[in-house]
Image 1 (spheres, each protein chain N blue to C red):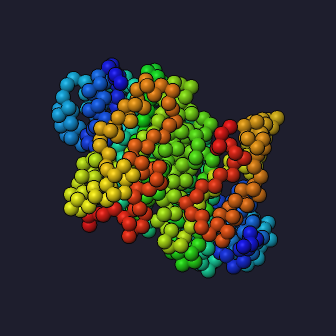
Image 2 (tube, rainbow over the protein chains, first blue to last red):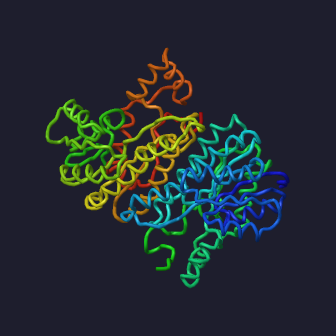
Image 3 (cartoon, rainbow over the protein chains, first blue to last red):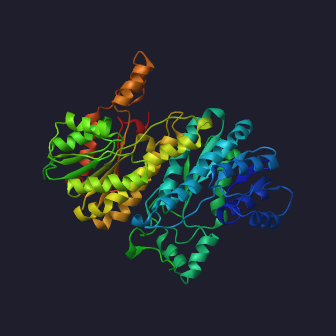
Length: 266
Length: 256
């Protein structure tokens, strides 16, 4: 896949899957706008990645106005846009009876509202370039999971179906919209949890994922590049799992009740 | 095993039950012996609905705007107190405003999410203590647009309904060991007053003709058919059914 001359904005790209995708797009010739909440971290990430095909587009996309600023900054810096990757997301935990309105609003704003409005603000450019949008949902958008991530799963289920309607509405504009659902991926977030539990998290994943291991960041990010590429030119409204078989088994690994839950640091 | 439906002594809350699918479901439960709390935004239309259903002590007025969490925290406990507990919650209140992607603004987004998703979630949360006590169940009324994309103008609607479909799975797992079942009903085109009105505005039965042409079964769904699905999911006949998504759409989401 060659992305020479392609202009990409990835929200939440200072770490994890977003960062992995940014690296891979860069290696294949694209220009990439890096986004994260903290301008300093964005600047450091750009410096570390190196080269002149990078744009800093910092901002907390939990507010619609910031979504607008981030997308406009990216478009100005990149000179247009070919692909928007709606990757930024948070996974604050709360058990069902402990979900507050504040928790709900924050999760919806960052995980769902941002995807809606970043897409809307990117559309004029994406229509010009016949570009595409990749939403990053989660296996938890497809099957139920741990009992403390209800609101996370609701946002991701929303994102999965948003993909379908958005794809249909934009099909005639030549703008493709697809959705990636990662399972357990070896991100700094999972690594931190693993360390805090003395290695139990990775052990749990190794036992419960059908493929018997956690996924690598690059082997997950590669699905984003596929969707963004011309190879996927006829692919729109698609939902792709990248999870070592977890969704096929309709399971995160027996994590739905406390006896079988993934170990957590407390 | 009898498939006979009997809701005698069952206590039911149907949100958005002054018209359409919710109203028909409330009537169905009521005819089969349940005590039913009727909800709608306006106290007047709730009172009118209760009067039209014949009144009596098996009908409870539970008016209130469930798009506001603070109001949920008033309306739901009062309804449960009046019912003397709760066996069945039908989360039906919702709105279907349309907007093309370039016209979606914060107000549209917020109003759709507030009623269709946030309201449904916090209504469930407020009902849970009572449902755990009764080993009751929840029917979330989503839409076929919760399992497929929709016609232009429905991005936010289908986002809320897709989220609701997945919320049901998530909650079904979380509540399975409490004995509380949670299921989805996804209606397709249904002959409600809302659709009847849209059809009238479309002129020359254009909407009905479109539906008949598009739907594999060649016709619009009747409201009583939606009611049948809601009654089934909430009955003991569906006692091992949880986290499921039942589509009542004349085959449309299977392909058309």
